[in-house]
Image (cartoon, rainbow, N blue to C red; front, side):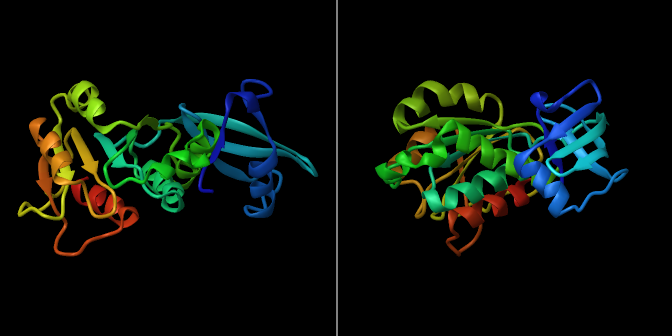
Length: 235
């Protein structure tokens, strides 16, 4: 935990917070914080700064906080991701959050098994927990927006044009001659398919909206590896 993420309900007054449960145990057992020690803290969807330990007795841990810093800038990206298998989903949610993605669409695709949509990880509380872990890792406070879309065609036809807007639209596709661009650092909408990629019908529907197909080379990567590889290359 590189950042102690704070919530509005933690505040006792304007400058004092009381931590409990997982965060208190982490500060006490991992940071081994003592009175007077200073930790990196940040308010969810707010500013970052420092927290000085002013009370540390058994089940009570209080910090005096000073929040003056802005969080790191977000990636100029909307990420469309075919819903990964549940055992990968937790890691991917944490990874994209840590890398600065602020709008994530988990999308259905022909190769996405229907059972994936039943995973408890997609419940609001569990989704929130994984995103928080990503923020804590990256020292960020701005929670991403996660959109779930179980029907591919209606989303592509009715919602995606507005999401794409004037951004550059790319779709990862292993069967293309176009190499993924590098360091574009401009507003981008990126679509990444399931294991094996989007089927041709799905690629064609994306192409109708101006999506360019791009590849990372001859190797086929797992989604959990492809996501950070492409984001690192683009930004």
